[in-house]
Image (cartoon, rainbow over all chains, first blue to last red; front, side, top):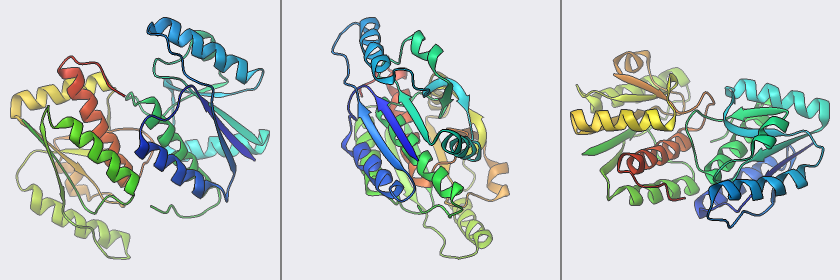
Length: 151
Length: 151
């Protein structure tokens, strides 16, 4: 069972990197989790920025099915997310998440996503979204394995 | 203009403390923000735990109006939250947020809250809720003052 999260650009805040590392470490006993930074655009034009990053994301994704993190996606509570994770891991053996860059992703990527997940109606930074996703994955794995959450 | 956030118990993760400190520092030029830890319960019984913490919260709140962070509260997007912040700060000069402890708060506190805010349908830890709230407050202050968000 494995989980992969891909995204353009590095995590921007040290405290968030520390948090992602913390949950990644805790997740090791449940699932193999990997991160892939496909590199961010350097364009000053947001339109070109999104286009460049989306092209690189598409190239990396290939024909794989993926779940896109999208503020307008489906909101799930933690129980529903955990049921979603269980279903995906049991049927496919892996889950592949895509987090857009600071200006989001192209319409093409939105249309290609097999599911779109919204962590909140609020807009969080790309880096914070990363942390929230990893924490919810950890929480789900604890629920799936019937263990109480450790704060 | 001031913002106060009260909560029982300390922030449990160093990386979250670092994040809260980071946004608090950035917020200084916009608003006075203070935190009050009213102390957590040590009971092993969740029912007594909530009761003890809620009693301390109520004592500190007194007759002040407050916004409770509650997973079942109203979800706002960032623009709506920023409009809410602006309205509250302009009409009352202050906003008073209450974050429950790890087992939440009593029904009495839920009923007394003048508004209930949900950051997500997902359940996050008490500490992570703190970080998300402070980040969204910072984001709102940037929107209210017409400045672009800095990641």
